[in-house]
Image 1: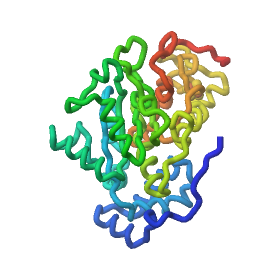
Image 2: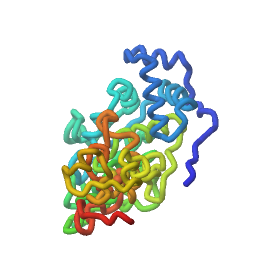
Image 3: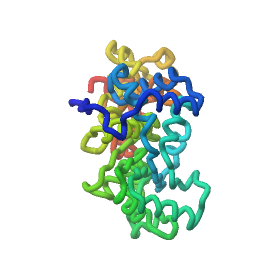
Image 4: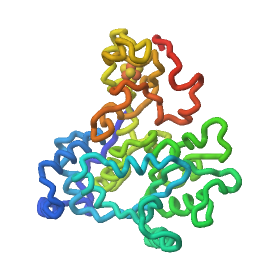
Length: 331
Ligand code: SF4
């Protein structure tokens, strides 16, 4: 797999100067060093060399115009917007969130009813916005299982995505239907790409929930380079979903030396041994969880002693035998 990056000079809209950056940071009271450190981190998330790209990202953020966002919620637990609200590095990431004008988000916006609908319609009419879809989209019964303002969610997603610069499907439910699409589901739940087909640009950031740093990095990539990150055939950006969890897992050395946890809480579990026998799917799952981590870069599932459930993969809920089925150690 080859990663491709734009090496050309910044586009005019993304060109910044040190004066703009200083002004931006001083109005937010953010030390320049902290901000550049965060930009280095974002460059790392994007699999770009931090030394070459941190300043370029910082300059682009200093001058880029605010990007309007329409955030739609379908069938899900709202775990992705929870993740979004708990972005790490509060001050520098707040600055990046300042670059977003979230014109419609049902869970947070103060307007309600027709005023909320107007905000969404006005943004669509103005164009130049990004759609974010969280949750699965129910298609059975003509979409009656999820209606907003008297309209089927299917229609709203098509309308909003149809005029967007791109649509970002956050979380596994928006990716391929997630839990609502698991066996036994009756709502005909699908993900964004399944609903929209091949036409519009759809970037998928699966995960249960998604890692907010991947959302931030996707938007920063667009603001810096004027284009969306390269992605695989399912729409998942290579920077976030291009390497096996297994390859970067802190327990890899135990896998390689044949030391496996055999029961929860046993001596091997207490000592951080490999969780493959306990059902870990890290060797079959591509995601940057062990590198980017969660909770302010504190840890990741396998690091804390839980198996990887492969939540970034399609239909991960329907694992034959269940999540914790013992797995053979030679596959
Ligand atoms: Fe691989 Fe999972 Fe073992 Fe980590 S815990 S080394 S991801 S099998």
